[in-house]
Image (cartoon, rainbow, N blue to C red; front, side):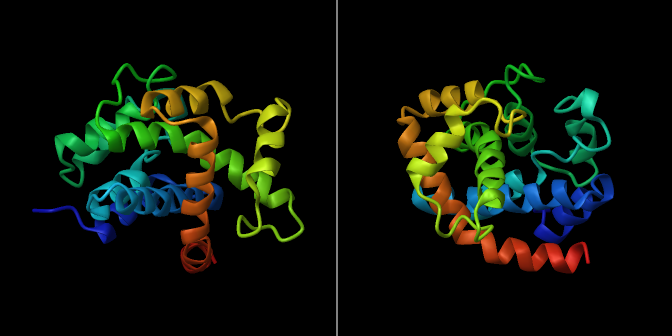
Length: 192
């Protein structure tokens, strides 16, 4: 039986209560759907991987990407989904390497969406809708800004994709614009 979004969201909420973590999951879900369409792929699988990529992070931060297979088994996640979820932490907390284009994109955008989100919160609009690449690049160079977002992972992600850092950033901004309103709406419903 195919995993539904409702099942995936229920699993996410079972192990994640913090609105920040849920917002990140919803954002990466929307970003992955955008990238799937951009790559000519079916967004359903890509977006579910994005939604569940940090399923174990809040409850098991010291076992991030290690505990995920056990939690994903609760919803009979496919081996492909388990591999994708575990590979997004490659080199940090996982030895599962991102191989497929979807896994490489998930690896690259996880940290980058955090950086873009932090930069957006600093803007008067509090939005990515008016964010320019030049503004993001300044934040990227400032190591003290959103220090928890690994610049090395973002750079490595772009390299693994064969994209320039500018291309990865521009595409991820566009992807976040595509889902910003929907994420805010759903977050207010889930975490009133």
